[in-house]
Length: 484
Image (cartoon, rainbow, N blue to C red; front, side, top):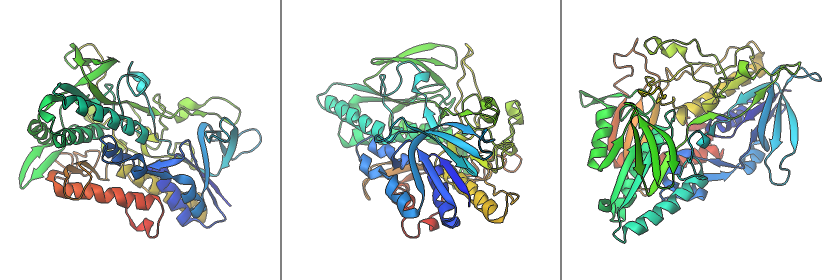
């Protein structure tokens, strides 16, 4: 009998749990630890954030799904890892603290034979003074945050209908943020809602981003093949913004936010103040705080985690200049060095470096988009770790690991506005691979599958994915046939 513990029930952790339960017989235990009682299809939080969907449309309770599947669920947060075991047991262990209202604060030590760290991000609103729902800006990072954003947007639209102009700022709340695609999609949706309400001409919409150029998206931009002509994601995104009269401010690091005023620095070293009536600014991500201990009680956190709190895996973390970055630097197995039974997937793993070129302002402030590791890549990583663990449980600890590198997998981003079958539109982007490989492709990516398109069909794809992935996450009949 083996015990597998999974920390986190987001896309990556939940996917791993379902596949492990499918692959292992009931003699083996699969336990999921998550501080949240509900699963959230985060890509659709954008629609919640403009009032097109509700929290109930994008979430569902985890406990019934896990009970039906034979997965043990602990509503708790992990606080420490003991990868070498402790003085009483050589097996690895995880310390958890309950977040279930009925048992909140109680602690427990779980033993494991295999561990998957899929804790996702810590939303570091504190990195920028005044950022976030407890400060002066809004967020769509959680379903609840998105609901609050929708309420504020309705208030702004009501003011616009009285004839009073309003300024809406959407983007990144720090120079090291990731998820530019989410901010881009939210701009697309807000613009759509303003037009539907008939108040767009009175609204100033500004996209504030740490990208050095539009269309960077934290992946160093893309080159598209448009009917035989090569164009860039910068030109493509710029044209969309021009058509929608969205003003873009690029290369920006938000220093602080006051009520109605955003202070930011740009790459040229200049400092600016931007007044606003509505601001949705995403926070930077950090690793969920975990402490690691050796068997003798020594703190070995620095060995397992990067300074940002993400878990180190089989990547090349050797410091090197941008010109020497390679796709081969990126992990393939997501196994923690020195621990063949510990894996980190999704946002929880430490990337070897950024994908976009790192930059600093003239004053030395870092303005560098962090690499995205969400959505489809997260699901693929979770399944990959699950396959490896299942093979090692069945065939022995020496069974070879399954692999899935971001330097060989693709991803899609669909910025869709509207939530009906006939009243939506979308800007859809696909890229292959996520991490560019200039040794294989002259532009870093395969132009046959890297493209940007606009139209209703992209909206249908986004709507279809919403329902498909909710169906899959609920582990309904045939769920495993839906690809990650």
